[in-house]
Amino acid sequence: MNGRGQQSRFDRGDDVVVMKFGGTSVEDTAAIRRLIGIVQSRLSAQVVVVVSALARVTDQLLEAGNAAAKGHLGSALATVRDIYVRHEELADSLVDGSAHRALDRELRGEFRTLESLLHSLEGSRQLDLRAQDQLLGFGECFSSRLVKEALCEAGISAAHVDARTCIVTDARHGQASPVWDATNQQVRDTLAPLLESGRVAVLGGFIASTSDGVPTTLGRGGSDFSAAIVGAALCASRVEIWTDVDGIMTTDPKLCSDARVIRKMSFDEAAELAHFGAKVLHPATLAPAVRENIPVYVLNSKRPEGEGTEIAARAGAGNVVHAITAKRKVAAVEIESERGVDSELLRAVYAVFDAHSCAVDVMAMSPGRMSLLVSSTGALPGIAADLEGVAKVRWENHKALVCLVGKNIRRQPDVASRALPAVADMDVRVMCQGASDRTISFLAEESNVEELVQRLHALFFAKPETSPDWGEVSVAFCQAGLSPAG
Ligand code: ASP
Ligand code: MG
Image 1 (tube, helix red, strand yellow):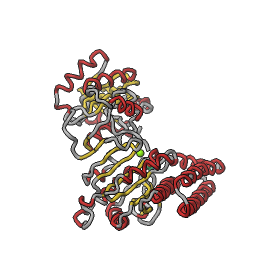
Image 2 (cartoon, rainbow, N blue to C red):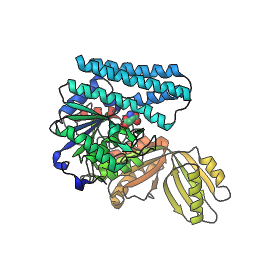
Image 3 (cartoon, helix red, strand yellow):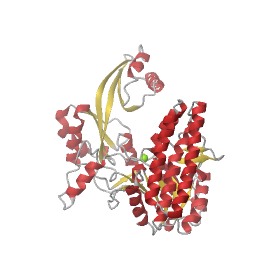
Image 4 (spheres, rainbow, N blue to C red):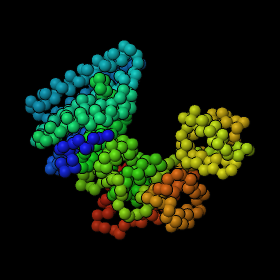
């Protein structure tokens, strides 16, 4: 799909690095100064910088759009005014002289366009997805222009690229998908000459356009996807996701203060972690990097010296248990049928769950009964009513699903035999029914989840020997939180 065969220049040896900075990594002057330092440290490679909107801006734009469409133009304009002031302040503190005047003109122009969009939303009284894409894209337009000028001011030769001229998508507004051939071609045609001339290319994440030039977005959180798309098109040697946590962690530090960063994991394991409730980068957004086998690093822009997490095709050898995830607010559902579980019942059950848009997590079956786990419990009364006469549906709320995730974990009998005695007193049910052999899951009472995670973590991630700087590091981890926000 990528057509690497036809490429002449961009093979691995050229060492292109794509660096994506999330919202919190560009949120204020200090953050942008850190970004500049980080980019500077990579200049031996050809560098592409992909930036999100400043933290909170996308939500504010959405809020403004909704307000305008409801007729509250005043409040919509006030929100946008706040966004404008924030960008202007950053421009003032980061850029001087004629460059500042030029940036100021650009930002003013963009904000006027944004204001007229809000006026027209007020007129039409609706915010459809097409208009929403146009609206939300402003955040990345502003941030990318600002960051480009800030880099130039710091003496780095940078060029701004409008991502809408190179990432080409279908017209599924709100969650568009790339048209790969056109995108790869455009990304290479636009970026290659810049990179070859030694410039750093800066583009907004998240935004794209159809082949007719209608603005689209790649879905919320889509800047990671942009970075992966650009990285794959250029056959980058690495994609770096700069965020505000130290990397992907062994468990949620809010549940267990001993949680620590996982140095290396595979794309499959990252997928598994995401599926079972960890807030990690979703591999769906990294699919182009996965396809082209480009390693992805999750790094903390507040502690750039940290090693972060490397996600690659194959993880290193090491711990069998890579991480422990916990998903709360799960309900355990039992479906019983006198006539037994046959394909007809399965069909009926799936159809009803589907009709209620209720996703099923894990499933077990015995002759007269099915056990399901669901994470949205609101639909269950309706589901039970729809299945009346076919099967009896009962459920228990306030459960949690705790999973040990690791490579071939199911085939390592000692994992379960170590885990079980440690949790035997906790009213835990073992669920081994998931299709993957990368998890062993436990269904527990929600109120026990902290204790359960801590015990399992102590068991499988014994604290390393006290090293001189461990104290300092573990404090940073605790503060970091799990979510690669922004
Ligand atoms: N700014 C967009 C969002 O908040 C895209 C991103 O940050 O990845 O969803
Ligand atoms: Mg994000």
